[in-house]
Amino acid sequence: MNNSGLKKKKFQAIAIISVLLLLIYGKNLTERQAFKSISRTFTEVYNDRLVVEGYIFQISDRLFSIQKLIDHCNLDYDYSRVINEIQGHENGIMELIVDFEKTNLTADESDYLADFKRIIENDLNIKNYELLFTDSSGVNSNQVKLYDQKIALAKTDLENLSKIQMDEGQKLISKAKVQINRSQIWAQFEVALLIILIIVIYIFLFRGQPKKQDIFY
Image: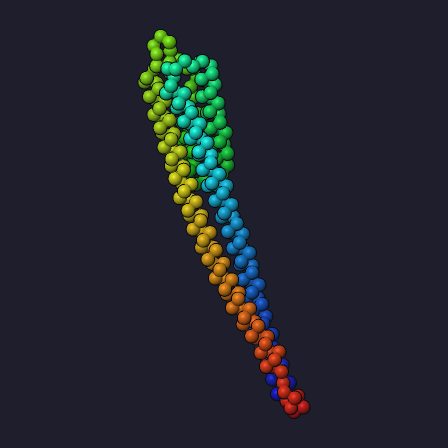
């Protein structure tokens, strides 16, 4: 084998190896981006869905406590204590809403949360316990029913918000599965490239060596 032929084979081998190494490097860059995307997806599932579902549960619990105080207004409660308890629950709900608003909200979430917030701020803001009950007239049934209707609307908003968490969480999990499957395909592609690289190096080092008679030719 003459020197020009040997040089040509060397050049071809180096070119093939370089292309394979570039492909592997490109695959690694793609893989890093995929892992970052998967990490962001699971972070979003936790921060914007699981944590928010916890907010919704705490808000529902406080809303139930408000309704219990309103519906049992004919019991022997201290006026100031009842109002303070209701306001305490409402303030707690508003604090949770502030945290809720900091999460990544969909358009529907923003609408339901805004409506829920309006009900708490305006419709359930009880200033005077006598609106619900007086010793002389007893329970103001019409006012209690009105508050119950507003609470029912607030509960509907919470149910819709909770359903969104399930739907959006499922979308994010499906997205993560696609990314993981894609990463697995890229991993198989990398293995194939490494096998080809090993074969090329083997051919070049062991089968591409000139025979002694060719060297002295």
